[in-house]
Length: 209
Ligand SMILES: [Mg+2]
Image (cartoon, rainbow, N blue to C red; front, side, top):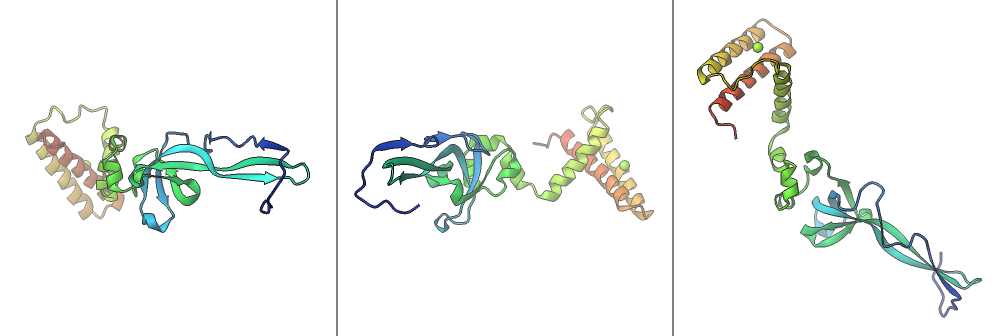
């Protein structure tokens, strides 16, 4: 498509069926929270919080047919995202972006963006970001064991004394498993028992917040 040579004679103006101000983007919905990292250098190498506005007209275009003299108005659409921290609209074509569904999706979003957004705090984002991966993995392993024991009475009615006693017992099992040359899985299982008992002691002391 070349440039239009002026002056031109226009017999009719056609508006292309896709010349609509807003359409739903293919991979997101209007109003979705998104993590956006603009490509332009002036924004720095930061990922920001944004709101998907929709697939909007990024570039209006006109095509003139010299034979029919019809001027056709067309448009290129692109996902447009409002980024409050930058006070600007960032285009999908000028950024890396993704819809935010879980705390994992905002790991690289700047702290300022998250802390200023109640929705993100509700996602548990702040907490997730402060917890290192090993501790999260350990917590999951502890939870697996607790779930296997859900049919038992739990620890809420146990005294601190008896829980500490149980913690010592589990510690002994850990030492013995290691001394007996048990497999890493078996030794780890005992260490996870120790961790769960320690958690219960801290909980029954009322110190888990
Ligand atoms: Mg054990």
